[in-house]
Amino acid sequence: MRKAGNVMDLQDRNLELLLEIIRNHDDVSRQDLAEKSGLSPAGVSKLVSLLISKGIVYEDALVSRRKGRRAIRLRINRDAMYAVGVRFARQYVKCGLFNVKGELFHPSYEPLQNFTVKQTLDLMVDMVTETLRECGEMRERVVGIGISAPGPLLAREGKIALISNSPGWRNICLTKAIEEQLGIPTFLEHDANASVLAEKWFGKGTASNCLVFITVGQGVGAGILINGSIFSGNLNVAGEIGHTTIDYNGPLCDCGNRGCLEMYSSSLALVRRAQELARDKQPPGWPKAEELSPEKVFALARNGDTAAQELIRRAGRFMGIGVVNVINTYNPDMIILGDEMAEAGEPWLQAIKEVVDQRVIPELQKETIIELSELAIEPAFLGAGALVIKRAFGTLSRLPNNAVTSVKNA
Image (cartoon, rainbow, N blue to C red; front, top):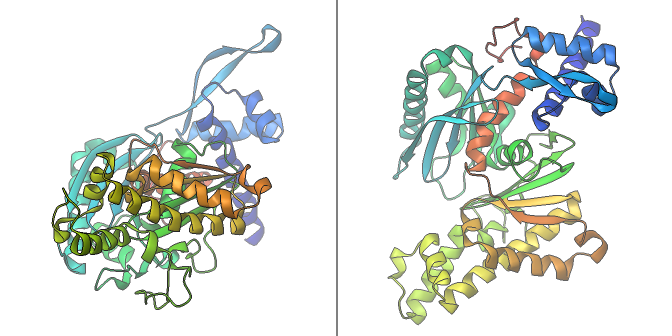
């Protein structure tokens, strides 16, 4: 039994490798797959036949090749399977249906206004139920539900360990609550991990071999993807850079640590600092302290307010320290930043890069690309759907021919 399982695992890894190549290239043949994958032509032919039999890949048309030879182009069936993606953030929930190409159907959005844990879970169930109702016959090809959420969380257990600044969200088993009501395999992933997968599949990180996505919103986290696989650590809590210490004697964080990075660089930290400034200095043209939000600070900065601009640069400098630590720890070839603070734009990014230039050795700094996310769909939302599709891609040999089904027990 163990040997058969190992053989099947190897086949699934090879199938996933071929799908990755086909997904990233619009004009690829069996010969191309053999050259790019390193697998034998006979092995590729056998695997492609399996993918075609399962309805995942189809033959499209003849394409020209060198020396006048022609080959059959292969494409992924974008509608072979679907995933329900749920983006659970501190202030809202998004839900929608995604296909293999990351196209979004039936999106919905609901704000969270002092919701309890139960009210939030009920809302998620209602939103997923409505999405499934709206998708009609596509419902038969839904292979699972993916949820991206702030951490720290224990993804393998489907459990949120803690959401800082969110009372009640400690040790909550999220996937069990959803599965028991809907009967659909449900997977939980850190929003940063979902985001890095979205950037690798659909965004700026397609060519990266060591990609880091840093979410900077009300919390701060990093998703690390190395050679196509998310680095999750022992308990799936790797990348919690928001709870690394940058001030040994700093203020106490909800996690129990002191001087955590997110207490200086998050959107909550930005607003706290802006509110202090509003009360103490009363800058002209500013709203009342209690009316301030990240968006209002960004708007003030864009309109030339120097105090708001300095607040953004200050938050960027603190975030730069976190980026320096990520570079020195993981040595990525690319870092992409996203979430709420990224809306501050180039001034925030430039402040980050200035700190990196000052604190990272030049040989390392010049080989690390740092950019803002430009995905049209929020990365953590898009990645919630992509993580389910990726799981299905990793178990294809165990799925019936032409009938993509649940990946829970595959």
